[in-house]
Structure formats: C-alpha cells, structure tokens
Length: 86
Image 1 (spheres, one colour):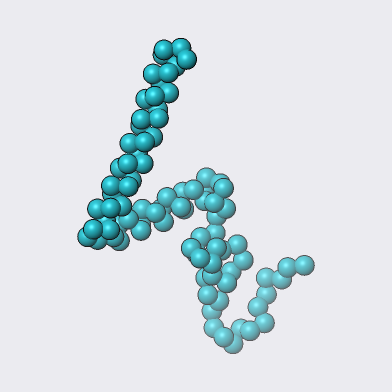
Image 2: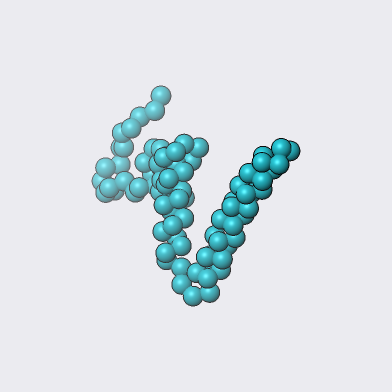
C-alpha cells in the first residue's frame, strides 16, 4: 500500500526530487518511453545546448550537425535503393 502522506511536516516543503513519479536525476516526471518523455528529453537537451559556451558549444554543434547529416544520408540511401528496386 502506498501512502501519499508525509509525517515530517515540520521540515518544510518537500524537495521536487522526493515526489513520487519524478525522476530524481533530471526532475522530470514523464516516462521516457512515451511521447511526453521524449519531448521532455528534447527540451532538456536543447536547454543544455543553449547554456554551453566556447569550444564546448562548437563541439556540440558539430556533433548535432553530424547526427543530422547521418539521418539525411540514411534517408537518401533508402530512397535511392527503393527507386533502383533493391
């Protein structure tokens, strides 16, 4: 049986990582295997990229560009293979 009641009310408000259903490491509450979880992951990734500066920012931008280029190349290769009839 799970109780949603706290017995230590004199300690002040409950920290966000202590609430049921919240991932303590990232303070997110959606299942990462759902659309909501994926959107939260994308938002966290984007906010992390905006905080980067200097060489780390350039490295992160290069990695993201390479990943996107890989997706584009995979899509183009699939389309070419389908057109050729393989």
